[in-house]
Image: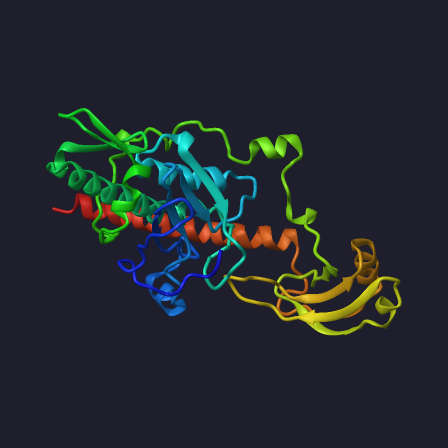
Amino acid sequence: MSTAPVLNRRDFLKTGAAGGAVLVIGFHLPSSAFASAEDQEKKKPNPLNAWVHITPDNRVTLILGKSEMGQGAMTALPMILAEELCLDWKQVTVEQAPTDPKTYDHGTGGSGSVAGSWLPLRQAGAAAREMLLSAAAQRWYVNRDTCKAQNGGVLHGARKQFLTYGELASDAAKLPLPDFKTVPLKNSDDFTIVGHDRKRFEAGAKSSGAAKFGIDSRMPGMLYAVIARCPVFGGKVAKFDAAKSKEVPGVRDVISIDPVGPGAFTAGGVVVLADNSWAAIQGRKALEITWDEGDSPNESSESLRAHFVENGTKTAKVVRGYAQLDAMLTSAP
């Protein structure tokens, strides 16, 4: 899959796929569920970092820009999409997005994948549903309000006619993309997929041992890296001597990396590159590093606990103060 050009939402609706037309919907998934609107504007993310595909064979595919880390994101995110699209769950497939930070916000962590994707996925699914409903109404020459989306297709109640999304994809792809901010969303009381148990997409492969993890990847000329990090949070490398490390058989190079802020976070450190993981580990052990431990060289579990207790006491006093003020205002004539 190649990187898509930057287009606005209404322009990003096109046809053309192997075997016939495909309805493609692009939408933005924010890199952080908790990022402010100002921060997101400053980052100016590519709005085409996820897609919904509906093909003539009536399959719906979500390109997943997050990582399955064991919490079920590979199943939870398609469930949100399928809900708004009124799909038969068996029709849903998911594909992992290619590694492309210019197009996808791959960051996964902080329990933010579902929270951050909840609204964009619902809006995308609802937009596709509304387009398909309009396509069906035009096909039948009927009032759009007499059409209902269900089980991966559109039903005309009076005529008892039914068209699958695959049959409507070509016509729907010619319609303008609805405004995501105003597209109608389903009432949670009508949910049939979200909130219900579903088999996880990756469970079978993991159970059988067929699943491929990052550690299983092998590339021609691939090296292995092990990072020596400062034992104190917020610390950094002051200086290091890699002479003994480079004497370890299999070690190719030793480099330092600087800390990087939120979004692509790393605390920095010294990286040992080697032909295999064992050589990289031994090379790290042989490093001579002097650390700049910053402002917290004596930090410990005990000092952190004391700090938390102090903050908790201050918070409790503030809460009690507000409660007393509220009681005074309530009892005042």
